[in-house]
Image (cartoon, rainbow, N blue to C red; front, top):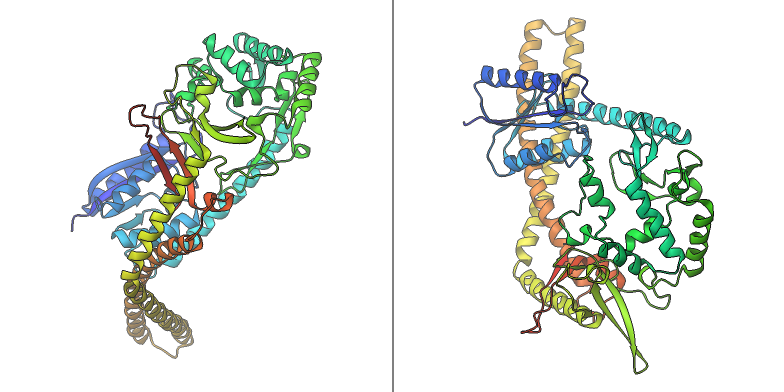
Length: 529
């Protein structure tokens, strides 16, 4: 056997033993040394060493961790080795998915030294699951403590984010306070003044772009801050946009107030942010020098209230729900496409146009609009084509699906019977031990019976692991097939797109630039299934 091993090390706490930020902490070095020595002792060959520093054990987006999983899936390694199971993950769902699921499929053994987790040891699974629960409880308690601490800081007016809002810098003497950033503050003032004078979001964005003023994201990067714009590859992120102007004009921070708690995580395991109502925000006034005085702020807010609901770009028609709302993007620059309309012969025509083209000239070459009705027709044709293709194939594969379902039922019944036998063996083992203590069974008899029980238990556990591995494969196949079948069956004969249909089936639609010679354009539909 190859015994090719991936070593994985992780540390989430801030390291106090680093000499500089790029150094590895002493704890990471110690983990590596311990695991390398263990591989040498076992005669295992090291395939790679993966390290995630300053990442939580609940984080599913750890770069080294995900690269290691890719190695496992591609069959490049036989063993994953960690100091403890919690270094691999503190998320019970991840433990079950990979250590007790995918690793069995991929024929990968998981070993951790300190807590003796080893998927090759029969009867070790329950101990791994108990460790997983304890690690998850630790995370939950830690999350609650951090939330309470941050809430207390916010109530006192201490800023708790790593970057100051555009127009300010973090005070080097107190990272929880702001000082004015003069160049950016002047831009903020000009935005408020232009809006007060009657200019709209688009005209303001165009004016700033014509002056070649850097938008907030690029400005932060060029200030030397450890900041990376997640949309940096999109051309539109290098330009001022109407949505940025919309956002800045509503930020109370420019009056000297600290405003926090606008959003919250769903839970410590789910990083998705949800918006909170205004009544739950934490607003502490007079915490730093204002950029916008009270008179200008009130004038702008009054104008925003008066025109609120009249801005076409931020309003949906009350008599119609746009089925493509929020899913149409420019294939050339990555920007969202803006739905607009015009009146002609008592009829209103709707079309989509790249927002970058509207806000800036010469940045994106996707300058021609596309009619909404044409885009809807194309999506309908693709949906009908997919339905016809799938259901033809479905007839051919019907018997195979039935066989898979029957096999899954058989395996589940066998699993139930084995679990009952294991429970009986465990009860018999407990009774045997009691008989030994009572003197009914001698030490020699106890050893013979105990060895027999352990051997039988080991065989049952091995069979259970094989059953679980096969069931996972069959269930995954069944879930994917049924999900696709039910969705396509639901919308098999539709002749008009609806909001519900589109957002159940489609993630994004990318519209490319129009080829002036062929009068055609590339349109990519990213389906959700």
